Picture 1: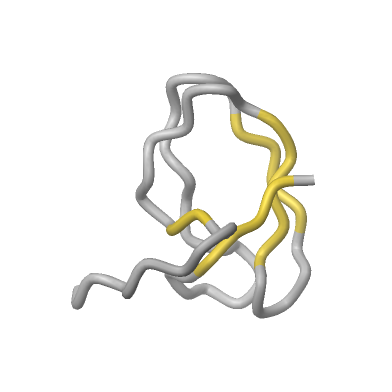
Picture 2: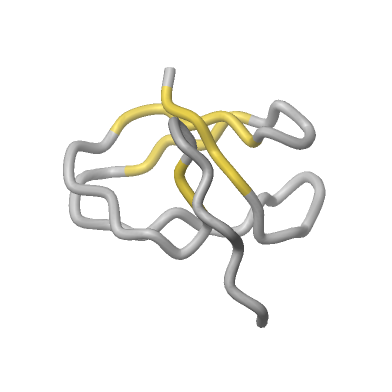
Length: 55
């Protein structure tokens, strides 16, 4: 997998999350709850590694 470029204000799939919370896929707006200390998964709706933002 080719690494994604850094985008300000967004998190990437595979990035470790320290604070936890609800994240939204930037491509399809699917919501995912991530617990502290876990990694952001790939999106279960669009089946891709991409960008997430926290709400």
